[in-house]
Amino acid sequence: MFLADLSEELAAVAPRLTSEVIEQAGTCLLDALACAYGGRNMPWAAQARTIAGDGDGATIWASGGQRSGLTDTVFANSVACHALLHEDTHAESRVHPGTVVIPAALAIGERLRSPLLDVLRSIVLGYEAVAQVATVVLTEDFVARGWRASSVFGPFGAAAAAAHLLGLNKTATAHALGMAASSSSGVCQWARDGTTEVFFQNANACRAGLVAALLAQEGATGSASAIEGAIGLRQAFGGAQGDVGEPRIRLDRMAVTATFFKAHPSCALTQEAIDAARQLASQGVDQDAVIAATVHTSGAAARYPGCDNGSALATPISRQMSLQFAVAAALTDGALRPERYTGPLDPGLARLAARTSVVVDPAADRAFPERRDARVTVRFADGGTLSATSRDNVNLTPASIVEKFHTYADPALGDETSAVVRTIRAPESCLDTADFAAHLH
Image (cartoon, rainbow, N blue to C red; front, side, top):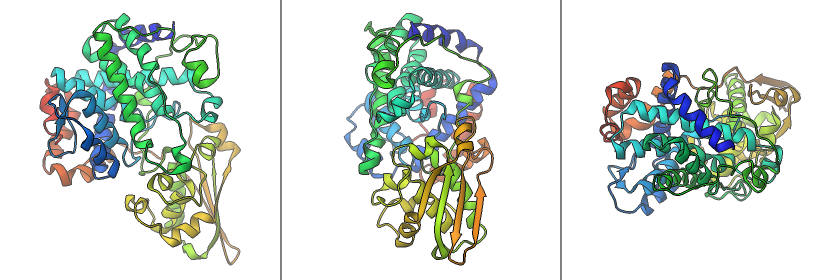
């Protein structure tokens, strides 16, 4: 059974993780924290903190010192990680693993006073669980049905990370993963309606996966065939049945090493188009002189809910998802500024977005997800055109993520931001994650 096999593989790989993989997990942790501090003032992050109950289970990051019970804490922290859409992405699974795995791992690590190095190991395993389940469930039918990958597959990542830190054996871990399957959920209608439940979907997944692991610790059971069973996840969400094969964990290509870090606070599928548009903006494009623009991208980007939207841009999430808005903003400002998402829509951006179309580029479509390519072409009133293609690896480097963390966290943490970075970069020096979490006020 797939989840039993996955539990075996995760247990086998945990002691063999390389220093490079652990270091990448640290980079993922730093990026998630950067996003949480960057998103702390967004309405949905504040709403999640407001409904958190009293308790002393764990620290709510970027809250001024608020603490709550474990489940409310991971919910609030996950919302903050997701608040700007600036979080990490695993393209093959179409999941933002940092928003679901890291809040669960750090909360359990804080509660148990685990060494930070063990928390980083749990993050690796959580990312892997997400990717392995997605590999066998994600189909074109899955996307067409309107399911959201992060909230369907996210519970498995939170459950696997928590199970490792709780010291669950392979059988109990499989039960946790089986229960996680029953909490998979989340549809993408928000992309059409511009509503805000998108920011809470991953948080629900994070909380559900954590609860699944805690229940398994208490002896609760979950189906080990919850993925491939005749009425399991693969059939219910992906419309497919049959043999799912062996989990394919590879130390040289684990999910945590295949995760990329967004350069821009926008949907992951808009990143390359933004890069191409910024190249054009550097040449001095006058938005009023552009009579048409075209985004050439993969089918995954063109067809994802909310991405091909040049007119319904009244709400923040509609702008954060839209390829047309992203390109219009990048052409106008030379960057994508988060403040463009809130308040009245700029009339110039609205006109330019409305004149922008999205088409599927066959070459980009064939290359996805191994490569994420896009090209933007603009046509001017005088008949001239300009075109730019996204550069390779539109992806923040570890050094850039340190800078991102300072940019987002310095206003809240001041000098403590440097201490957070030093600890993550030397995790063996932190034998108690509760000490580390004390910095995250």
